[in-house]
Length: 452
Image 1 (tube, helix red, strand yellow):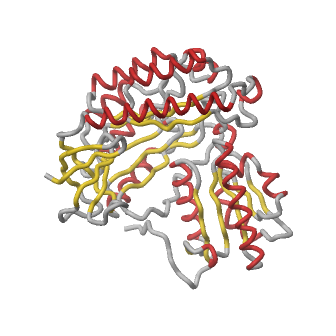
Image 2: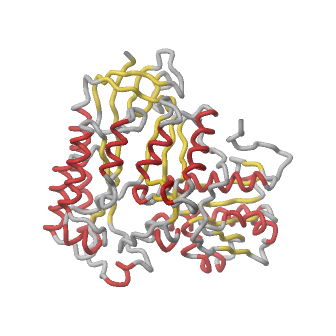
Image 3: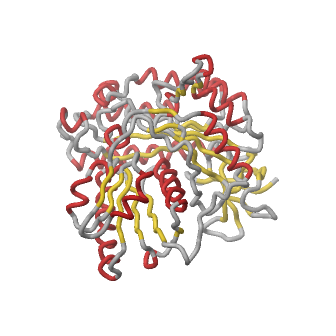
Protein backbone atom coordinates (compact mmCIF):
# COMPACT_ATOMS: atom_id res chain seq x y z
CA UNK A 1 0.00 0.00 0.00
CA UNK A 2 1.45 3.36 -1.04
CA UNK A 3 2.11 5.83 1.79
CA UNK A 4 0.12 8.98 1.08
CA UNK A 5 1.22 10.96 4.14
CA UNK A 6 3.94 13.60 4.61
CA UNK A 7 7.42 12.52 5.66
CA UNK A 8 8.46 14.13 8.95
CA UNK A 9 12.22 13.55 9.32
CA UNK A 10 14.69 15.91 10.99
CA UNK A 11 17.58 14.37 9.04
CA UNK A 12 16.17 15.66 5.74
CA UNK A 13 16.14 19.22 4.42
CA UNK A 14 12.76 20.75 5.23
CA UNK A 15 10.11 22.47 3.13
CA UNK A 16 7.34 24.66 4.51
CA UNK A 17 4.27 25.16 2.27
CA UNK A 18 1.48 27.71 2.58
CA UNK A 19 -1.54 27.34 0.30
CA UNK A 20 -3.87 30.12 -0.84
CA UNK A 21 -6.99 30.02 -2.98
CA UNK A 22 -9.12 27.23 -4.36
CA UNK A 23 -9.31 23.47 -3.88
CA UNK A 24 -7.17 23.06 -6.99
CA UNK A 25 -4.35 24.89 -5.22
CA UNK A 26 -4.69 22.58 -2.22
CA UNK A 27 -4.24 19.60 -4.53
CA UNK A 28 -1.35 21.32 -6.33
CA UNK A 29 0.45 21.78 -2.99
CA UNK A 30 0.12 18.03 -2.43
CA UNK A 31 1.65 17.40 -5.87
CA UNK A 32 4.50 19.78 -5.02
CA UNK A 33 5.16 17.99 -1.73
CA UNK A 34 5.20 14.62 -3.50
CA UNK A 35 7.80 15.87 -5.98
CA UNK A 36 9.99 17.37 -3.23
CA UNK A 37 9.73 14.34 -0.95
CA UNK A 38 10.95 12.17 -3.82
CA UNK A 39 13.89 14.56 -4.04
CA UNK A 40 14.77 14.07 -0.39
CA UNK A 41 12.79 16.76 1.42
CA UNK A 42 10.55 16.42 4.46
CA UNK A 43 7.61 18.61 5.39
CA UNK A 44 7.72 20.98 8.35
CA UNK A 45 4.90 23.03 9.82
CA UNK A 46 7.40 25.28 11.61
CA UNK A 47 8.55 28.02 9.25
CA UNK A 48 11.57 28.77 11.48
CA UNK A 49 12.97 25.30 10.68
CA UNK A 50 12.41 25.40 6.92
CA UNK A 51 15.23 25.33 4.39
CA UNK A 52 12.73 26.16 1.64
CA UNK A 53 9.61 28.30 2.14
CA UNK A 54 6.94 27.99 -0.57
CA UNK A 55 3.69 29.92 -1.01
CA UNK A 56 1.31 28.33 -3.50
CA UNK A 57 -0.72 31.29 -4.64
CA UNK A 58 -4.01 32.56 -6.06
CA UNK A 59 -4.64 35.51 -8.41
CA UNK A 60 -8.40 35.40 -8.79
CA UNK A 61 -8.91 38.62 -6.78
CA UNK A 62 -6.65 41.52 -5.94
CA UNK A 63 -7.02 41.08 -2.18
CA UNK A 64 -5.66 37.53 -2.48
CA UNK A 65 -2.50 38.88 -4.11
CA UNK A 66 -2.16 41.70 -1.57
CA UNK A 67 -2.28 39.17 1.24
CA UNK A 68 0.54 37.19 -0.36
CA UNK A 69 2.69 40.32 -0.81
CA UNK A 70 2.32 40.82 2.95
CA UNK A 71 3.49 37.28 3.58
CA UNK A 72 6.46 37.75 1.26
CA UNK A 73 7.66 40.55 3.53
CA UNK A 74 7.46 38.16 6.49
CA UNK A 75 9.36 35.53 4.49
CA UNK A 76 12.05 38.17 3.90
CA UNK A 77 12.51 38.38 7.68
CA UNK A 78 13.15 34.62 7.79
CA UNK A 79 15.80 35.04 5.10
CA UNK A 80 17.43 37.89 7.05
CA UNK A 81 17.55 35.82 10.25
CA UNK A 82 18.73 32.62 8.57
CA UNK A 83 20.92 33.18 5.50
CA UNK A 84 20.58 30.33 3.02
CA UNK A 85 16.81 29.96 3.37
CA UNK A 86 15.12 30.00 -0.03
CA UNK A 87 11.71 31.54 -0.70
CA UNK A 88 9.60 30.33 -3.61
CA UNK A 89 6.29 31.49 -5.07
CA UNK A 90 4.31 28.91 -7.03
CA UNK A 91 0.88 28.85 -8.66
CA UNK A 92 -1.23 31.48 -10.38
CA UNK A 93 0.45 34.57 -8.92
CA UNK A 94 3.82 33.18 -9.99
CA UNK A 95 2.50 32.87 -13.54
CA UNK A 96 0.94 36.35 -13.59
CA UNK A 97 3.60 38.42 -11.79
CA UNK A 98 6.74 36.46 -12.52
CA UNK A 99 9.17 39.35 -13.18
CA UNK A 100 7.73 41.57 -10.43
CA UNK A 101 8.22 38.78 -7.90
CA UNK A 102 11.88 38.35 -8.82
CA UNK A 103 12.39 42.11 -8.81
CA UNK A 104 11.23 42.20 -5.18
CA UNK A 105 14.54 40.58 -4.18
CA UNK A 106 12.64 38.64 -1.51
CA UNK A 107 11.83 35.70 -3.80
CA UNK A 108 14.41 33.17 -5.03
CA UNK A 109 12.18 30.78 -6.99
CA UNK A 110 9.15 31.39 -9.21
CA UNK A 111 7.31 28.36 -10.64
CA UNK A 112 4.00 28.42 -12.52
CA UNK A 113 1.26 25.77 -12.28
CA UNK A 114 2.75 23.59 -15.04
CA UNK A 115 6.35 23.82 -13.77
CA UNK A 116 6.28 21.88 -10.52
CA UNK A 117 8.40 19.01 -11.85
CA UNK A 118 11.27 21.49 -12.22
CA UNK A 119 11.18 22.60 -8.57
CA UNK A 120 14.04 20.32 -7.37
CA UNK A 121 16.37 21.72 -10.04
CA UNK A 122 15.20 25.30 -9.43
CA UNK A 123 15.95 24.87 -5.72
CA UNK A 124 19.40 23.42 -6.39
CA UNK A 125 20.26 26.27 -8.75
CA UNK A 126 18.77 29.17 -6.76
CA UNK A 127 20.58 31.61 -4.52
CA UNK A 128 19.95 35.22 -3.43
CA UNK A 129 22.21 36.35 -6.25
CA UNK A 130 20.78 33.91 -8.79
CA UNK A 131 16.99 33.58 -8.57
CA UNK A 132 15.38 30.91 -10.73
CA UNK A 133 12.13 30.92 -12.71
CA UNK A 134 10.06 28.48 -14.79
CA UNK A 135 6.60 29.65 -15.79
CA UNK A 136 6.09 27.93 -19.13
CA UNK A 137 2.49 26.80 -19.58
CA UNK A 138 1.93 23.34 -21.04
CA UNK A 139 -0.68 21.83 -23.36
CA UNK A 140 -0.08 18.32 -21.95
CA UNK A 141 0.88 18.46 -18.26
CA UNK A 142 -1.68 16.84 -15.91
CA UNK A 143 0.70 15.35 -13.26
CA UNK A 144 -1.23 12.10 -13.80
CA UNK A 145 1.73 9.90 -12.80
CA UNK A 146 2.35 11.72 -9.50
CA UNK A 147 0.58 10.50 -6.36
CA UNK A 148 -0.11 13.58 -4.23
CA UNK A 149 1.08 13.49 -0.62
CA UNK A 150 -2.02 14.30 1.42
CA UNK A 151 -1.54 17.28 3.74
CA UNK A 152 -5.03 17.19 5.27
CA UNK A 153 -5.43 16.35 8.95
CA UNK A 154 -8.54 14.20 8.97
CA UNK A 155 -7.59 11.43 6.51
CA UNK A 156 -11.22 11.23 5.42
CA UNK A 157 -11.71 13.42 2.34
CA UNK A 158 -9.25 14.12 -0.48
CA UNK A 159 -9.07 16.07 -3.74
CA UNK A 160 -8.28 14.52 -7.11
CA UNK A 161 -7.49 16.77 -10.06
CA UNK A 162 -9.12 15.32 -13.19
CA UNK A 163 -8.13 18.11 -15.59
CA UNK A 164 -6.18 21.33 -15.77
CA UNK A 165 -6.66 24.71 -17.42
CA UNK A 166 -9.77 26.32 -18.88
CA UNK A 167 -10.97 27.18 -22.40
CA UNK A 168 -13.95 29.35 -21.48
CA UNK A 169 -12.20 32.74 -21.16
CA UNK A 170 -14.96 34.44 -19.19
CA UNK A 171 -14.26 38.14 -19.53
CA UNK A 172 -13.60 38.75 -15.80
CA UNK A 173 -11.45 35.68 -15.15
CA UNK A 174 -7.66 35.43 -14.93
CA UNK A 175 -7.55 31.60 -14.77
CA UNK A 176 -7.06 30.84 -18.51
CA UNK A 177 -4.02 33.16 -18.46
CA UNK A 178 -2.46 31.60 -15.35
CA UNK A 179 -3.39 27.93 -15.84
CA UNK A 180 -3.43 27.60 -19.61
CA UNK A 181 -5.61 25.58 -21.94
CA UNK A 182 -7.91 22.78 -20.89
CA UNK A 183 -6.62 19.20 -20.91
CA UNK A 184 -8.15 16.08 -19.37
CA UNK A 185 -6.31 13.41 -17.44
CA UNK A 186 -6.29 9.71 -18.31
CA UNK A 187 -9.29 8.24 -16.44
CA UNK A 188 -7.36 5.11 -15.50
CA UNK A 189 -4.96 7.19 -13.41
CA UNK A 190 -7.90 8.94 -11.72
CA UNK A 191 -9.54 5.64 -10.78
CA UNK A 192 -6.20 4.30 -9.55
CA UNK A 193 -5.67 7.35 -7.35
CA UNK A 194 -9.20 7.13 -5.92
CA UNK A 195 -8.76 3.42 -5.19
CA UNK A 196 -5.44 4.09 -3.41
CA UNK A 197 -7.15 6.70 -1.26
CA UNK A 198 -9.93 4.26 -0.36
CA UNK A 199 -7.38 1.58 0.52
CA UNK A 200 -5.66 4.11 2.80
CA UNK A 201 -8.84 4.78 4.74
CA UNK A 202 -10.24 7.78 2.88
CA UNK A 203 -13.98 7.69 2.44
CA UNK A 204 -14.60 10.64 0.13
CA UNK A 205 -12.99 12.00 -3.03
CA UNK A 206 -13.70 15.34 -4.66
CA UNK A 207 -13.02 15.40 -8.40
CA UNK A 208 -11.63 18.80 -9.38
CA UNK A 209 -11.48 20.88 -12.52
CA UNK A 210 -12.09 24.47 -13.57
CA UNK A 211 -15.02 23.01 -15.54
CA UNK A 212 -15.50 19.32 -14.77
CA UNK A 213 -18.41 19.00 -17.18
CA UNK A 214 -16.12 19.55 -20.15
CA UNK A 215 -13.85 16.67 -19.06
CA UNK A 216 -13.25 14.53 -22.15
CA UNK A 217 -10.36 12.13 -22.37
CA UNK A 218 -9.61 10.95 -25.88
CA UNK A 219 -8.09 7.51 -26.21
CA UNK A 220 -5.17 7.89 -28.64
CA UNK A 221 -5.75 4.41 -30.05
CA UNK A 222 -9.53 3.93 -30.10
CA UNK A 223 -12.16 6.69 -30.13
CA UNK A 224 -14.75 4.18 -28.90
CA UNK A 225 -12.90 4.20 -25.57
CA UNK A 226 -13.13 7.97 -25.07
CA UNK A 227 -14.45 8.96 -21.63
CA UNK A 228 -16.66 11.92 -20.75
CA UNK A 229 -17.46 13.26 -17.29
CA UNK A 230 -20.62 11.20 -16.74
CA UNK A 231 -18.67 8.02 -17.54
CA UNK A 232 -15.79 9.06 -15.28
CA UNK A 233 -18.20 9.69 -12.39
CA UNK A 234 -19.59 6.18 -12.79
CA UNK A 235 -16.10 4.63 -12.96
CA UNK A 236 -15.10 6.24 -9.66
CA UNK A 237 -18.43 5.48 -7.97
CA UNK A 238 -17.98 1.78 -8.78
CA UNK A 239 -14.76 1.53 -6.73
CA UNK A 240 -16.84 0.94 -3.59
CA UNK A 241 -20.29 1.92 -2.32
CA UNK A 242 -18.48 3.13 0.83
CA UNK A 243 -16.49 5.72 -1.14
CA UNK A 244 -18.36 9.00 -1.50
CA UNK A 245 -17.81 10.97 -4.70
CA UNK A 246 -18.11 14.75 -4.98
CA UNK A 247 -17.03 17.11 -7.76
CA UNK A 248 -16.48 20.79 -8.51
CA UNK A 249 -16.83 23.00 -10.37
CA UNK A 250 -19.64 22.63 -12.92
CA UNK A 251 -20.35 25.09 -15.72
CA UNK A 252 -24.04 25.80 -16.46
CA UNK A 253 -23.52 25.64 -20.23
CA UNK A 254 -21.97 22.17 -20.06
CA UNK A 255 -23.65 20.16 -17.30
CA UNK A 256 -25.45 17.37 -19.13
CA UNK A 257 -28.54 15.31 -18.45
CA UNK A 258 -26.24 12.26 -18.43
CA UNK A 259 -24.29 13.64 -15.45
CA UNK A 260 -27.54 14.33 -13.59
CA UNK A 261 -28.86 10.81 -14.28
CA UNK A 262 -25.58 9.16 -13.19
CA UNK A 263 -25.69 11.15 -9.96
CA UNK A 264 -29.21 9.93 -9.30
CA UNK A 265 -28.27 6.32 -10.13
CA UNK A 266 -25.49 5.93 -7.54
CA UNK A 267 -26.17 6.55 -3.85
CA UNK A 268 -22.49 7.22 -3.16
CA UNK A 269 -22.32 10.10 -5.66
CA UNK A 270 -23.20 13.01 -3.42
CA UNK A 271 -26.35 14.91 -4.30
CA UNK A 272 -24.79 18.36 -4.46
CA UNK A 273 -23.90 20.55 -7.43
CA UNK A 274 -21.96 23.79 -7.27
CA UNK A 275 -23.27 25.69 -10.30
CA UNK A 276 -21.83 29.22 -10.51
CA UNK A 277 -24.36 31.64 -12.00
CA UNK A 278 -22.38 34.91 -11.47
CA UNK A 279 -25.37 37.10 -12.46
CA UNK A 280 -29.10 36.82 -13.07
CA UNK A 281 -29.04 39.40 -15.86
CA UNK A 282 -28.79 38.32 -19.50
CA UNK A 283 -26.97 41.56 -20.32
CA UNK A 284 -24.34 40.87 -17.67
CA UNK A 285 -24.03 37.20 -18.59
CA UNK A 286 -23.34 38.17 -22.20
CA UNK A 287 -20.76 40.76 -21.15
CA UNK A 288 -19.16 38.18 -18.85
CA UNK A 289 -18.97 35.72 -21.79
CA UNK A 290 -20.70 33.01 -19.76
CA UNK A 291 -22.33 31.53 -22.90
CA UNK A 292 -25.71 30.81 -21.35
CA UNK A 293 -28.81 32.85 -20.54
CA UNK A 294 -30.80 33.30 -17.36
CA UNK A 295 -33.49 30.96 -18.70
CA UNK A 296 -30.93 28.30 -19.68
CA UNK A 297 -29.54 28.40 -16.14
CA UNK A 298 -32.96 28.11 -14.54
CA UNK A 299 -33.84 25.27 -16.90
CA UNK A 300 -30.77 23.37 -15.67
CA UNK A 301 -31.88 24.00 -12.09
CA UNK A 302 -35.36 22.67 -12.89
CA UNK A 303 -33.84 19.57 -14.51
CA UNK A 304 -31.63 18.89 -11.48
CA UNK A 305 -34.55 19.28 -9.09
CA UNK A 306 -36.87 17.11 -11.21
CA UNK A 307 -34.40 14.20 -11.18
CA UNK A 308 -32.98 14.76 -7.67
CA UNK A 309 -35.50 16.77 -5.59
CA UNK A 310 -33.21 16.85 -2.53
CA UNK A 311 -30.04 17.81 -4.42
CA UNK A 312 -28.05 20.58 -2.75
CA UNK A 313 -27.41 23.57 -5.02
CA UNK A 314 -24.78 26.21 -4.37
CA UNK A 315 -23.41 29.00 -6.54
CA UNK A 316 -21.03 31.94 -7.07
CA UNK A 317 -22.30 35.51 -7.53
CA UNK A 318 -20.44 38.67 -8.59
CA UNK A 319 -21.81 42.04 -7.46
CA UNK A 320 -21.08 45.20 -9.43
CA UNK A 321 -19.67 43.89 -12.70
CA UNK A 322 -18.85 46.45 -15.41
CA UNK A 323 -21.90 48.50 -16.35
CA UNK A 324 -24.25 46.66 -13.97
CA UNK A 325 -27.49 48.61 -13.59
CA UNK A 326 -29.93 48.52 -10.70
CA UNK A 327 -32.21 46.36 -12.86
CA UNK A 328 -29.35 43.93 -13.56
CA UNK A 329 -28.84 43.67 -9.80
CA UNK A 330 -32.56 43.06 -9.23
CA UNK A 331 -32.43 40.33 -11.88
CA UNK A 332 -29.75 38.60 -9.82
CA UNK A 333 -31.85 38.83 -6.67
CA UNK A 334 -34.90 37.41 -8.44
CA UNK A 335 -32.89 34.52 -9.88
CA UNK A 336 -31.59 33.73 -6.39
CA UNK A 337 -35.16 33.57 -5.13
CA UNK A 338 -36.24 31.29 -7.98
CA UNK A 339 -33.24 28.96 -7.76
CA UNK A 340 -33.41 28.91 -3.92
CA UNK A 341 -29.70 28.27 -3.43
CA UNK A 342 -28.61 26.47 -0.27
CA UNK A 343 -25.53 28.68 0.00
CA UNK A 344 -23.32 30.88 -2.16
CA UNK A 345 -19.89 32.43 -2.51
CA UNK A 346 -20.54 36.14 -3.05
CA UNK A 347 -18.01 38.79 -4.09
CA UNK A 348 -17.66 42.31 -5.36
CA UNK A 349 -16.21 42.50 -8.87
CA UNK A 350 -12.43 42.89 -8.77
CA UNK A 351 -10.81 43.89 -12.05
CA UNK A 352 -7.93 41.63 -13.01
CA UNK A 353 -5.28 43.08 -15.34
CA UNK A 354 -4.99 41.30 -18.67
CA UNK A 355 -8.53 39.94 -18.76
CA UNK A 356 -10.97 40.76 -21.54
CA UNK A 357 -13.08 42.84 -19.16
CA UNK A 358 -10.09 44.93 -18.10
CA UNK A 359 -9.26 45.61 -21.75
CA UNK A 360 -12.79 46.21 -22.98
CA UNK A 361 -15.07 47.46 -20.18
CA UNK A 362 -14.58 50.23 -17.62
CA UNK A 363 -14.90 49.17 -13.98
CA UNK A 364 -17.56 51.84 -13.56
CA UNK A 365 -19.81 50.73 -10.72
CA UNK A 366 -18.87 52.92 -7.71
CA UNK A 367 -17.33 51.03 -4.76
CA UNK A 368 -20.11 52.09 -2.40
CA UNK A 369 -22.73 50.76 -4.85
CA UNK A 370 -20.84 47.46 -5.17
CA UNK A 371 -20.77 47.16 -1.39
CA UNK A 372 -24.47 47.95 -1.00
CA UNK A 373 -25.44 45.42 -3.68
CA UNK A 374 -23.18 42.74 -2.20
CA UNK A 375 -24.69 43.31 1.24
CA UNK A 376 -28.16 42.92 -0.25
CA UNK A 377 -27.12 39.69 -1.96
CA UNK A 378 -25.61 38.36 1.27
CA UNK A 379 -28.71 39.24 3.29
CA UNK A 380 -30.95 37.47 0.78
CA UNK A 381 -28.74 34.39 0.71
CA UNK A 382 -28.68 34.23 4.51
CA UNK A 383 -32.49 34.11 4.44
CA UNK A 384 -32.53 31.49 1.67
CA UNK A 385 -29.96 29.36 3.52
CA UNK A 386 -31.99 29.46 6.72
CA UNK A 387 -35.22 28.61 4.85
CA UNK A 388 -33.47 25.71 3.12
CA UNK A 389 -32.11 24.39 6.42
CA UNK A 390 -35.47 24.77 8.17
CA UNK A 391 -36.98 22.41 5.59
CA UNK A 392 -34.50 19.75 6.75
CA UNK A 393 -35.52 19.87 10.41
CA UNK A 394 -36.97 16.47 11.29
CA UNK A 395 -35.23 14.68 8.40
CA UNK A 396 -32.55 12.01 8.75
CA UNK A 397 -29.27 12.07 6.83
CA UNK A 398 -26.31 9.74 6.39
CA UNK A 399 -23.29 11.83 7.38
CA UNK A 400 -19.59 11.17 6.87
CA UNK A 401 -17.86 12.28 10.09
CA UNK A 402 -15.04 14.70 9.23
CA UNK A 403 -13.85 15.80 12.67
CA UNK A 404 -14.51 17.29 16.09
CA UNK A 405 -16.62 20.43 16.39
CA UNK A 406 -14.56 23.57 17.03
CA UNK A 407 -17.09 24.81 19.57
CA UNK A 408 -17.59 21.62 21.58
CA UNK A 409 -15.05 18.81 21.91
CA UNK A 410 -17.88 16.40 22.73
CA UNK A 411 -19.50 16.97 19.35
CA UNK A 412 -18.60 15.86 15.84
CA UNK A 413 -19.33 17.41 12.49
CA UNK A 414 -19.76 16.00 9.01
CA UNK A 415 -21.57 16.66 5.77
CA UNK A 416 -24.71 15.09 4.44
CA UNK A 417 -24.84 14.05 0.79
CA UNK A 418 -26.31 17.48 -0.06
CA UNK A 419 -23.15 19.13 1.37
CA UNK A 420 -24.87 20.60 4.43
CA UNK A 421 -22.87 20.52 7.67
CA UNK A 422 -24.38 18.56 10.55
CA UNK A 423 -23.14 18.90 14.15
CA UNK A 424 -24.08 16.23 16.70
CA UNK A 425 -22.97 14.61 19.99
CA UNK A 426 -20.28 11.98 19.35
CA UNK A 427 -21.98 9.07 21.17
CA UNK A 428 -19.18 6.65 20.30
CA UNK A 429 -18.67 7.75 16.68
CA UNK A 430 -15.29 8.89 15.42
CA UNK A 431 -13.78 10.67 12.43
CA UNK A 432 -14.15 8.58 9.28
CA UNK A 433 -17.31 6.80 10.41
CA UNK A 434 -20.67 7.06 8.71
CA UNK A 435 -23.49 8.12 11.04
CA UNK A 436 -27.22 8.45 10.52
CA UNK A 437 -28.43 11.63 12.21
CA UNK A 438 -31.75 13.36 12.72
CA UNK A 439 -31.93 17.13 12.37
CA UNK A 440 -33.37 18.77 15.50
CA UNK A 441 -32.87 22.47 14.67
CA UNK A 442 -30.70 24.68 12.51
CA UNK A 443 -28.90 27.93 11.93
CA UNK A 444 -28.41 29.46 8.48
CA UNK A 445 -25.12 27.51 8.22
CA UNK A 446 -25.53 24.32 10.28
CA UNK A 447 -27.95 21.47 10.93
CA UNK A 448 -28.05 20.72 14.67
CA UNK A 449 -28.54 16.97 14.90
CA UNK A 450 -28.31 13.77 16.94
CA UNK A 451 -27.41 10.20 16.05
CA UNK A 452 -30.40 7.89 15.55
